[in-house]
Length: 118
Image (cartoon, rainbow, N blue to C red; front, side, top):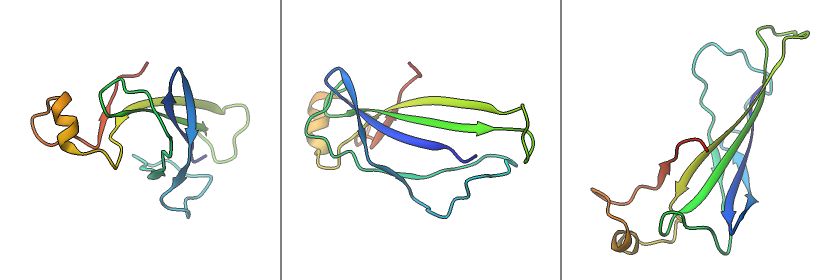
């Protein structure tokens, strides 16, 4: 089955869910996996405050849940995948100069920075 993806922003010591929607609404619910699958989502992190583990960047968690089976008509061979991915995300209204005054990058500040699983 295509993944169910949810987005969260760390606010203080907890995670606040934020709107996340598929960029392409025509994605089938049941898919045959024949290679790499790319899913695009639009994240709208409308939060008043957020945890800054890296100055000016939001600490974001994307939670991905899906069911996988080697057959189109599964029996007892369904595997549930539940994965979390973490990134630092630059808010759209933050100036590059403000970020560069606190964090040094070899060029302009990136829009997002991947984090190792944790």
